[in-house]
Length: 118
Length: 262
Image 1 (tube, each protein chain N blue to C red):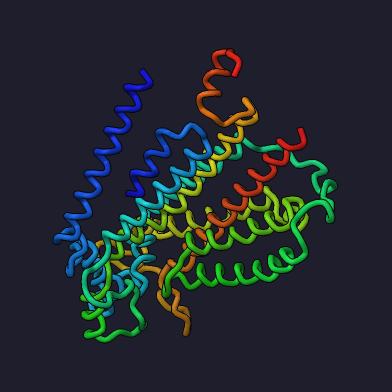
Image 2 (cartoon, rainbow over the protein chains, first blue to last red):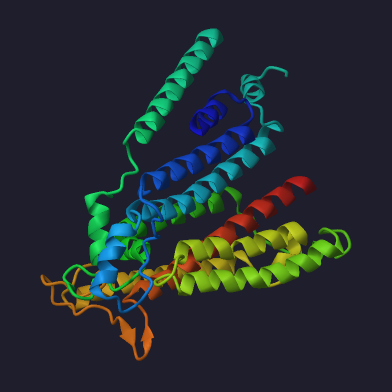
């Protein structure tokens, strides 16, 4: 549902800042979805961290049986940082556009590019 | 033309709604979250800190950090490269030489009220402590270089909001210092990644493997547990991520200031 809303924002909204906000919502939704795929459907699943530095064999096997999937979490933690960097780049581009045209509405920018009056 | 485009967009969105609902229903009726996880995740859980069978172990009880730097280390290195290139793009677009910028700082004119300023003073100390703790203990507890760096970069951000960008620059943060510290972090990553090659290992090798001669990074130094190379990688990544975020914030706020004055 949130994916739909954010895609609607990216495609339909005419304002560039609103497009960027919708893009952040899209990225966060995808991350939450990936974390959701890692969930384990048992009562009281544990985080993928061993609680002691000298575990016994029973502790290791119960850790294997009760912990959630660690791989999607490792993928998401880098994806968040990359997301922030890309958003910062887009924000700087948007500031550049505003300095050039003094508006952030997409239709008006196209009209100004053609040389018409708004 | 515009009408056709709008109809196409609406049809596309309806398709996405239907597929999302289908996905959720399939998940609920025995789809993705199961009592048993995938084989790859099971492999990582089994081998990360298996002190009885050390063929594939990584020497860290924190499985996520072990995957991030040991099993999928090259992936993380290239993620760092993407971050680096994004910052270079921001610098190219928005860089301006800073001359006499500190003279513009007026204590009365810039910033919010005294209450906000006092709260900011207290909070930035807490943020710094928590983020450094996250980064340094990332190999035994949740956290790591990425999380710690992102948390640390919040402190300059709220200084910019509470005081102003000029106060941040007068505190000693600057683009050049951030770039130097970022480069130190990158050098740490490169040295740690390439060091096993000199001892007939492979790139980003952490622990001893049967098919190479490299004995592996030490898991303990004296009484302290350091988890192989994970602590050095976390320190390097902490420097890179925090300093690059600080560079982004300084660039954007200075760029906006320039727009106001002209």
